[in-house]
Amino acid sequence: MLAIARALMTKPRLLLLDEPSMGLAPVIVRVMLQTIGEINRAGTTVLLVEQNASAALRLATRGYVLENGQIALEGTGAELTRHEGVRRSYLGIRVSPGGPGR
Image (cartoon, rainbow, N blue to C red; front, top):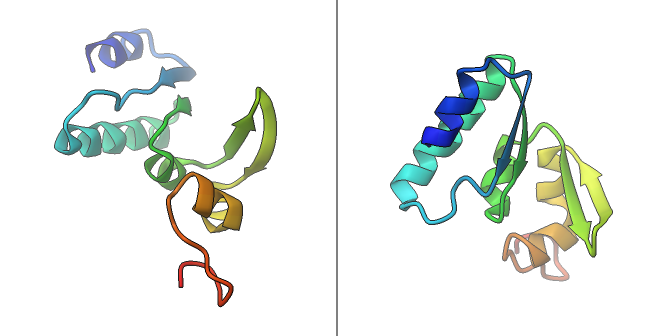
């Protein structure tokens, strides 16, 4: 959190964040992600690399799924959240033949 604060002191146009939630308690993760959203809404572009895919996609204007260093999928956060492969592989949501999430 200190590193993010120090970076914001320079008034960047782009903020690159690699796994900012790693090792944090769940309550702190929620605050961190809310803060990242506020930073973005205030006008700073944020490039977020995050293993917590569901949280990242909730924040994302655009998202990219990388496989072996190549872009396998791209779309809005909402589009990727609805994508059957993303739901199954990254969000842990089982997709039944009857439809998504059933």
